[in-house]
Image 1 (cartoon, rainbow, N blue to C red):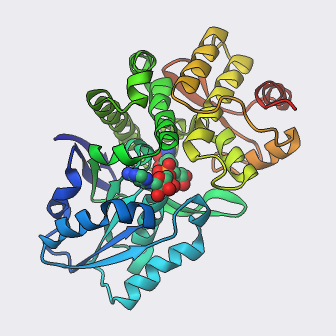
Image 2 (image 1 turned 30 degrees about the vertical axis):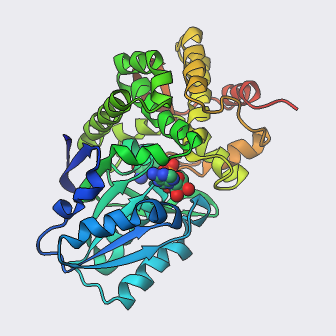
Amino acid sequence: MNVVDVDTPGGQYPIRIAAGRIDRLAESIPADATAIAVVTNPVVGALYGERVAQALAATGKRVVHIELPDGEAHKDWQTLNLIFDAMLSNKLDRRAVLVALGGGVIGDMTGFAAAVYMRGVRFVQVPTTLLAQVDSSVGGKTAVNHPLGKNMIGAFYQPISVEIDLDVLTTLPAREISAGLAEVIKYGLILDPAFWSWCEANAEKLRALDPPTIAYAIQRSCELKAQVVGKDERESGLRAILNLGHTFGHAIESGLGYGAWLHGEAVGCGMVQAAELSAEVMDFPRADVERVRALTEAIGCPVVAPDLGADRWIDLMQVDKKTEGGEIRFVLMPQIGEALMRSVPDAALRRVLDRTVETA
Ligand code: NAD
Ligand code: GLY
């Protein structure tokens, strides 16, 4: 088993990475827990619910199962309330522990429920998508969507551990693997040029989930994310670079309706757009824009953005947590392996939109 430690003001905890990790989940439940509530959805529940239930039975504690409808379209306030309904009707107290068994949608909603149920209970992340393993389960961002903006209602709240089982990736659809790989290559682009080149050299093996290759990618991604959130848990500066491609990506997601494109697909395409914008307003080399486009395509993500209309694109991008005083701020790259945040002239943004959206 590999362990990556996360150390933030809001909590210190391990990310444990191993094949078969979900069979040993009892080890992650604190001895003083009064009950365990496993939050999942019908897809993940059907695949792994029974194994998790068996593993947790070893604690001897009461286990409550909470099933939420599957999908980004259900990452909302109404669905969140189902967790509270189940916790209250089962009389779960402050020492109950929540277990988020699923992808980023389940993880973000369970984390938010844990942050506010009785003003805070402990929770364990058991991410079952690649995207959740390399990104959303780490760092304590929890949220639900609002019809007017993605992840707009939420809290920073750290889990007590992240339990990554490498085996569960084998049941993921290919599209979900590509979406997760978008977040993997993102770390190379913003922080680690050697990791970026390694991803370029291993794109095929990554897509095929070659065991040692994907295990290394997950570990390196978690290390890089842990470094960033350890320095800036609440995104007062540095952490914003983790949002490379997200300003464009969130506009795609809310513009097309949540769930039409996968989050990682939208981020992948958004990274190509961010690379184009970096070349437009900074000295990011054109040849590197093409490298970003080529690797995004090689991992199976779209590289041509939908035509939402330039004004609507800009309108949607203004509903972003990085926007200040109505000014959209983008994560841009001076070079591969380095990122910063800045606003851009409207004309430059419109030129990039023009170049990167599909033409009729
Ligand atoms: P998801 O949670 O919707 O999961 C994708 C699909 O895969 C779902 O249908 C799910 O049921 C299914 N699934 C999950 N595990 C499976 C498995 N092992 N086998 C087969 N099917 C499986 O999507 P996601 O990509 O995991 O997460 C996206 C969400 O994460 C977005 O809401 C995004 O905003 C959020 N996010 C949060 C952060 C953060 O820091 N908190 C970071 C990145 C993304
Ligand atoms: N995925 C962005 C962050 O965790 O900050």
